[in-house]
Length: 221
Image 1: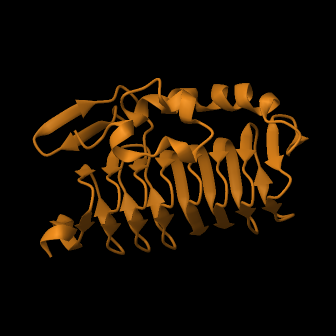
Image 2: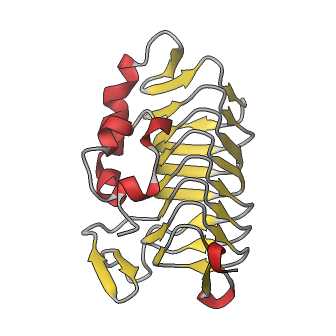
């Protein structure tokens, strides 16, 4: 199918693994992220500090004084939350992640080793292990007509039943600078997206999204 949770993610690299295993499609998990954090937070143990109500930060994480951590959220070990980052809430940020200058996160799961380092907006999205968003790249999470998001996979149309849905990035995805992932974008593992692209639909794993929506397999190059 190319767009199920097991197609996209290695669940060994997130504290949300047991939660995600309940679902077939990753967007089904978006509605429960807030409740998941409220459940997980009190069970995290002494390695985490509750720095304010329902905001848990690992003792090895580095959070710059100017960063905003909205409730509820979890910041994992060795993660760096940089100057003026804005975590609006309902965010799970894994281990060894980078949340950079002026980055905004909202209702997201970031697996371990994810990098959103420069001027990114990531909302209502799940970013897989070692995925990386180039400077200025964003997830657009609401359609301009405000209708429910549909995932387009060629001629197949998958009804999601939700209004806010940004992007599902599989493990090891590289999104180029200033690219826009339109609502309902699903990018398979080991894919690359060209800078300044306008991305939509399902991209098979090991592919490259090039200019004007041309998709090529890395194996066929």
